[in-house]
Image (cartoon, rainbow, N blue to C red):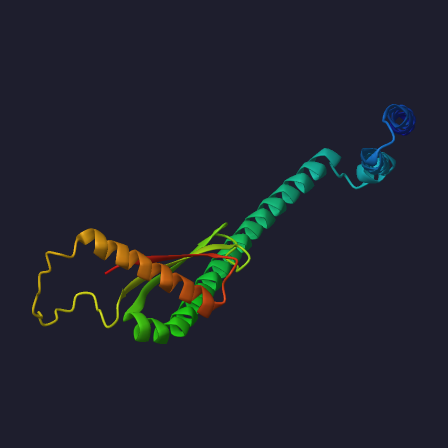
Length: 206
């Protein structure tokens, strides 16, 4: 009988406290969550005699459930982080493949006119993006092209041809001619590649 009186008292006190909290909490999105929590606690209070009959420790059960929930949340978070890392790795591989394909395609387009008109070839193409994680054409800022003499292979020793020293031709004139030639090549590449909204930089690597 004493247990029944205590149980009814707890229900009455809790209902009064719930009513006070409901009046004090302003009408907002948070209020429905507070009502949900109060409702769950009220259900536990009503089920207290059932727990008592079956010798169930409510506090221990709640702590155990909370612990399992936290462990599950941690596991889910680890899995989510692992999936994000794998997704980044896959995206990086795809970006690298796309960049390589684009580089090969641009090289093939420019190969013939470069060799026939300027006796040059592309040694390297670098793509500069606004954001390394978003390697798309929209995010492309600059294409840097390094040129070399056609048929030049690094590390290969060729026969030494006769050297003619022209003291009348200054180094400054040679550099000026080379700079003018690179400007022509830049214009030609922009036209062949049909690029008018990206910066193309041409460098001499010979």
